[in-house]
Length: 267
Image (cartoon, rainbow, N blue to C red):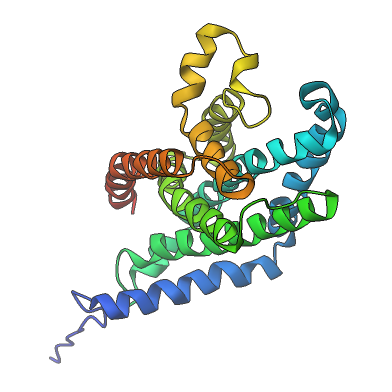
């Protein structure tokens, strides 16, 4: 009688360098998938431009007195709003991969356990950079002018991407916990709308009721919008930037462990 022995091809541990290569490969997979789902990049491109046009030319004159003044105020805020809204794609695509068994297939491959999640977040960061660049470029066409310097623009990109990387873990947690795509949308909209619309991205804090101002002033969306305005329009940069980084670190510290824990339980 012949005994067959099967040796697993999957190593028990993968080096960090190999894990980084796995992450880059899976991030590229996510980016290439845009060819088969062009609506994803259209959503990332068209939606923020629509918000900018609608709010600038319908409400700008009433809020700021002129569309030019409102554009300088609203563009940094809409950049922040778009960063928050774009995390919806992480939750949807991650949930889609989980429900279709893509992660079960990836687990059978000789890759690091954390690279699928990291690859998804890295790919989303690249998409976020595209979206920020597009919105900023469109704002320049409409008449927005950077009042600081190249370093202000570079700082805006850096801060937005750092904040995006941290907020993405909220989307990862939602994508892992939700059992279906429609529930992902319910959870994400329940989180994104109150957070963004109770901030100063569209209207100054002083124009709101006193009871609401207390929350608006500590809302991380308000603080990030103030930081971006300062880096693009001028003003106090240090305080809102440091507060934004503190919020980003707090969000990362709370949601990253929760997301990884739920992810391990699900796969």
